[in-house]
Image (cartoon, rainbow, N blue to C red; front, side, top):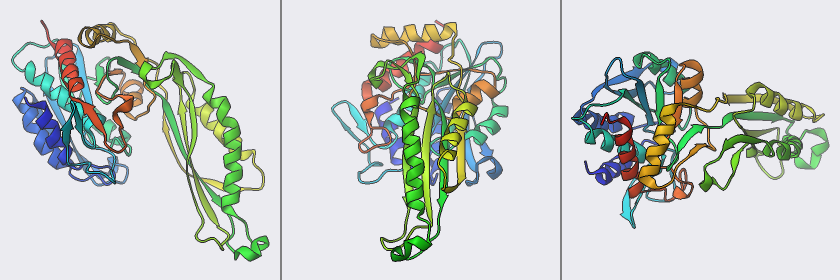
Length: 385
């Protein structure tokens, strides 16, 4: 297959989430490619009650089943983050790079998989294989994944190959996460009469100052797991960031509300409940500020994967690229904890993302060679001979 054209075609389909439109258009394009590779496909309609308030979604599963062989499921998602300020959905190719929203995260990996499956369509395979093409990864897809699980049995003891991963190694761990929105409440009055009101923005800043005093303690926490070298880190690290503050209507009005959004990332050795309690104790230590939790979103930490086939995959990557290893990703997602903690599977990944690919940013791109190399890696990994 012409993987460059295939990726260009996929990039032109704007699957931004939110709002999550054009998913079925993308599946219309992908489904014949899986069938051409010898896979049986099925579209799974996910009821709205399993979509966290979004419209009902349709996901694509593709199967080349071989009962009795080890179970291997490839994970991917078709949605991308929104883009502004550049021609994100008009792909271009230059200097061995393919530019466009989703080129690296993660339509490029999906195309590499298709390229590999096409290469082995008439060959015996080592695994009982399924492929997941999911939606809403960029906004939250946990309940959709849980609904899909019953169509992927057996799951206990299976292997999940996560294509939403970085290039050139096997990734055996990722960060847990807590996203916490705190709404600070005040009383709105004319600014000249501030003594009669309560300034929610100033109250929010007092909470932020307390969190910033906690931050150095959090960031000093290092995992035993190596971080991928191109990240610039030696080990996985915890994170605490204040990424959003929204409050105030006008310069001469004392604001009655301010929203503070906290992003806490946890290394695998940390406990989700302990990290949440630490945040709440820090915020509660600030006296005289009226606040409430507006939203909290949690991704549990996961014990790193360890299996002989992971070592085998690392060896194949070294053969193809000249370098490899087993590392932790400095990212988070719904899929790893669900596949491991709820389904009893073993989760690992490899993809085409590099730190300099500008994922989620302007002029996102992927290296053509990385797609070709990942396709070769997958081909060798799943082939019987």
